[in-house]
Image (cartoon, rainbow, N blue to C red; front, side, top):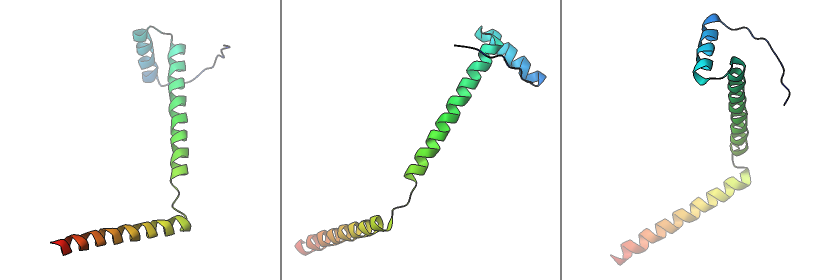
Length: 91
């Protein structure tokens, strides 16, 4: 895989933290930056996917679906009321 060199500007305190972590991980600063960017991009892609999924499932029921839901609730309520009525008549 081809590599490209780039230059970035960092605050001194951040640079020192990067330098310290790279030493602890026994990787170069370049490798640490590459790992950090890979993780950032993966999180960004996951966030975009989550937003797309939420948008796909966020739609409200259309009028036809609403009518079916109302009819189903009405039928369920009637069944429950009939069951309660028949139970109380037996007692």
